[in-house]
Image 1 (cartoon, helix red, strand yellow):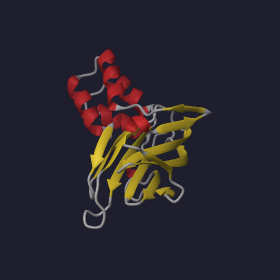
Image 2: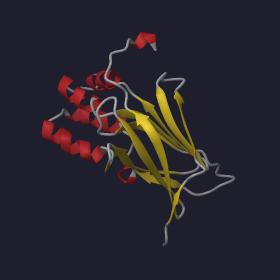
Image 3: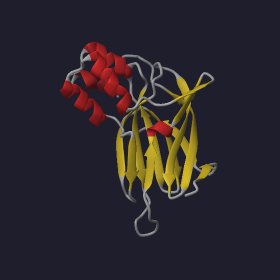
Length: 190
């Protein structure tokens, strides 16, 4: 089967402040697909994973990797449009400082946690917290989870988000995404 690769010029890429999280987001909307990346402060990530059984050092390791809450939706209607959409985070490309790299996926982290001897319960909570490495979405499906970009807090990067619709490989670049700085904020002030 031939695959058509499309770099989408018509996709809407937006940036703003997420109403619920009160942090910056970057979003793609294209032909019923929506992908939103919402900043997470390193301190939020530390607290979240310490509460799930990770040591202070292991929680800090995660927090220092540039974590975003990622929401992926196939908003297409089963009535008007058919067919699943699928993605693999292994295809997404991060561009920073003149180099390309991938995201740090569940599979990458499994090796890390095994080497660090992280508690099994903490590892399980971690896996369920991450956006799946691969997923298929039927019309109307959506999911969310954390995505780890393996960059220092405050870093700026571009990201090629890639998904497949039928025999098309769709690519949209989001420019100038900024990892949250490593600063303390009062949760009550949000």
